Length: 109
Image (cartoon, rainbow, N blue to C red; front, top):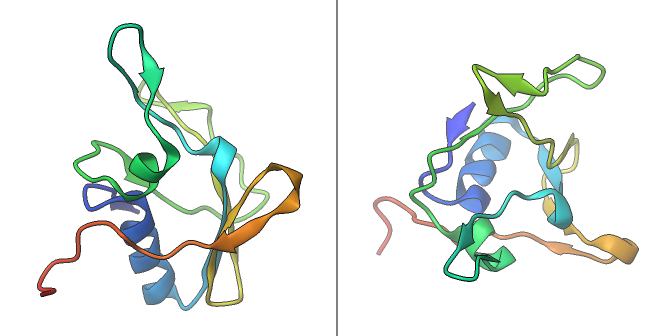
């Protein structure tokens, strides 16, 4: 489990790197904030790479029952952990592309 304050793409990359795995993220499943009047969802790129989100990202074994809410907070499944060490962004229609970490990187020039 990790907070995604540095951006979903970056913090997911940290989990995968430390665990020696990859991931497949379903683009349409990634939660997005609504902003403005009238309210509009933020762009997917902001949801993937923006930071300062007060959210937690965690993994669980497949087949493990995960509640729909924990302490009143909704849980959203956004993808799967896979053996190959690559993170892919999956879109409807079967297109996929590599999801590179583009959030905040500490100690990077």
